[in-house]
Length: 181
Image 1 (cartoon, rainbow, N blue to C red):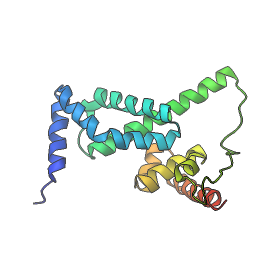
Image 2: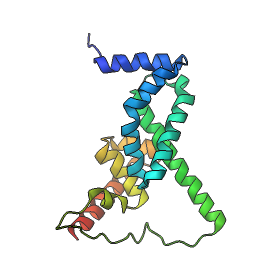
Image 3: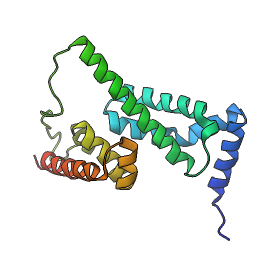
């Protein structure tokens, strides 16, 4: 018989407590996971304020949906999925608002800003990631930084696995070009 690590047992107890309405248990789950969720959101949005909003909204949704958490995946994986959905939902709402306002904006996806090196040859990797087109950036962050498999990333983003792989290839190629400049 394989025993679960201590942290998983504690998580299970906290989840059960939170599912029973214990806000302190949920608060502890929040403390344990907010850093990773915020990091995911900031990498996907490339915007600190928006990332904070998306992370908070993800936890609000998690609290509302906690009764549906069945434990088939880890709590952090379930929470990551909610956070990804929040970021993508925001992006969809943002696109609809832009369409309704008929704003003419520079297409940042096709003409990203040029990167400049600061002191010496050091280039901020986060700045380079933030210049990637949205789809490529999302796949890169989920696969390369958070370690999800292509099928998991494809499922999270609602795209085909082949599209996921192509976006990752595109992200790597663009990052290589930008970091070589």
